[in-house]
Length: 166
Length: 125
Image (cartoon, rainbow over all chains, first blue to last red):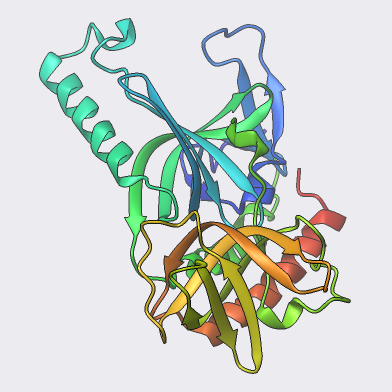
């Protein structure tokens, strides 16, 4: 499996992201599924589109949907940093900052806005989704078009090019 | 309501929305773009135009959007075809897209359709 794109936020259109190959790895329970496209292992993605649903569970999470015109990507933004044991061993000042940033992102994500979301590719009930780490609300109405063109160019010139076997 | 039930609005031009088009189906989820020509506060029906084509949008669910005649708007919603074959988009979301380059938008849309058709025939995964 090729690792050259593993730490890159790959820009994929929704229909492409939703058809990534999912492979279960029973040896690791904390990260049970890995994702690949065209033989390249992927872990991060970037999507741009209109927010068409938002379901907030205060201090737990915000689930939302990004519609880029080719499909809908489900996204999850965790808001449980102050109560989760996962963060309890980390520096409290850092955790507060992470929690504040997540709260700020959650407030920005409103129905109808165009958002750029970067994060980890994860899976929920078998459907590929993005665990959001970074959210930007876009105000220029042309950014979605530029994102489509970026996705198509990158697929043709980079992601579809199978690297030589090493 | 779970987000997996939400359908993606297919990107269409107003020109695509004639009764013989493959997009012209009851309940189809669509995304349309056009300049606001008319808006009625009483009925919440907006009429958008693009060149010589016009289309009606029911905006009753979009309470936070302010409507300005002459501005360009984009809506995502479901197509409701009435018995007289007149269609209205029941908008779920909408936004003002003043400043959008519509030529670039429609050209990119053609490329996107070709890319998607090619990809579906030759899956990369």
